[in-house]
Length: 264
Image 1 (cartoon, one colour):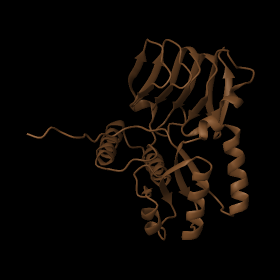
Image 2 (cartoon, rainbow, N blue to C red):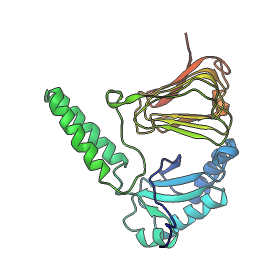
Image 3 (cartoon, rainbow, N blue to C red):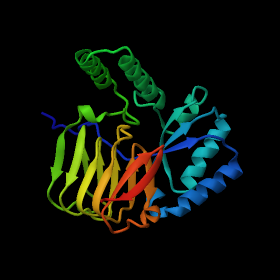
Image 4 (cartoon, rainbow, N blue to C red):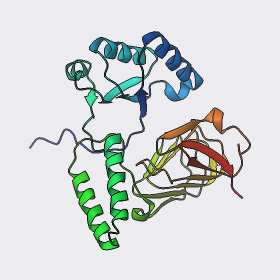
């Protein structure tokens, strides 16, 4: 009997989403080059999702992909205004994730439904039934891009890691907070649907609220992170170097801007 040659599994990947608002090649190239140069170690060879906020011609799209590759970015998927670009997307070997359940429109729709339920005074048992239906529908989807919003009320017990997190390691707390009672090395990556707590030095990457929870926070005893992200908004090491550098700190979203504050 032939042995199994492969397995296929779902996974969580950290990707950069490049939102294309306007595309005029020279200006776009200048701005993107400047951005990549600001943190070359982070952007170089990073996987990229292109989010087209307005339609592009086939030629413009090919120029966009070529520019990204020239700057050592790795486009892997496209979403947004792609109706006229499907043949080109296929020819370039990219994935079209526009119909993913994790698109921005889906997130807005889900938030609107939640607000409507609250306004109508639906009781807690009805809300739990609605959440179960949404979860079942989400599990039936086969394409994953940006994760859905996750509210703190549905988080599971925290995932606790009591050993140092070494370079190259990735730890993901799915549906819960992540608590690390040791230090996190450079090149390590922490991901959580909820908050991240590091009771040591945070030198790697910390991405909290990865399924869209903008209320998530990152807490650490010594802030020296390469990157910190809350619900997709991120800051780099250069921005971390401030009043809270190498001190106890918390990072949170305030009006879609990441803030760093001391732990009192």
